[in-house]
Length: 434
Image 1 (tube, rainbow, N blue to C red):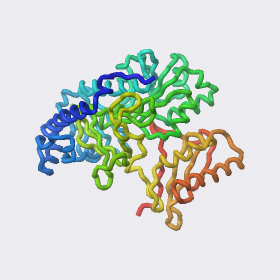
Image 2: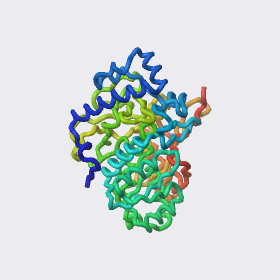
Image 3: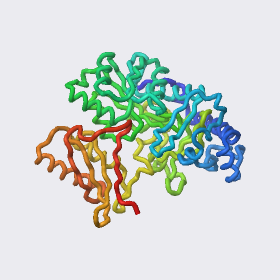
Image 4: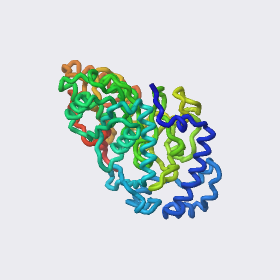
């Protein structure tokens, strides 16, 4: 059953959505112009003032914002209010060494709770549920976003945090958890641990799950559904917007609804930065419409997706839908002149029933300076040498049909690939640098 947390706004007319967006856009433009020196300087360079924004189409007059802009002004240079008004801080993982920091006012936290409550309700969460949250609590936005949203729905929250997989499963069993959140790859990791411990996941009470923080393909989604016997929903968000809560797929499972009263979305060609045509793929660019702490104009997410044609979804929601994230524009790999997204490899692997859920790809350069691709993947069960060789040959052929050239494939026993950190590391690029 498709629940709605805020039916009035989730089913609001398209005209009303556009009215709200224009009103909020004008307010945000004034807010950043008056309070953020980075934007004041950008407006001056572009020879524009806030009053130039008269229609939603005028958004193209506004400057784009990149992650480098946020890092250059870290930690608090992009804040649009007094620090006295901020009550919480979150930050990205900072894999480059400089984390992106976002500060939240009390109203920001209220809106974050609201959009997450919508996402969780869309995924089936109600005040009757026991919600287990196996995500690390800390500066990472994930755990708190899910926590606040679940509390707003009225569910009983188990803040179990990340790790200690055996303990996670025992908590689910002991407290009769009905709904779990987290990262897709960790849901499969828990399934592997359950199998090794002889725990039958189908006997647990878990019947719904909402997962985000990393891209996951329809094939992996299906595997999670089968392993847990639960309905699986896809959540999209990013620290720069609020954290999780930007969009989620409904029970129709045909695209993610993006909350247009809080985020104004564009899809641009990542090379030309011009708008793409209807239902064409490009980079998702987001403007915060209600954020007080760190509002952002036209933030380049680097995430590749496309919008569906605008019509009311079968679930009744009117907010625009986008396809699941295909990959990141900066994650696209060029090897032997071919553009490859890791998701393309995962899609092939997940179609093979003999393959496990954990995998990674290595990029190297051979003695002839030719780039090589090696895919390592776990088998679902222990294989004989003959079975292993046959599976490797099959996967080489299947992957080649997608990427044109022959990869190397190594099939490993179950649980051979260690998972470190929150998100699965799929790509290791060891190619020679010029």
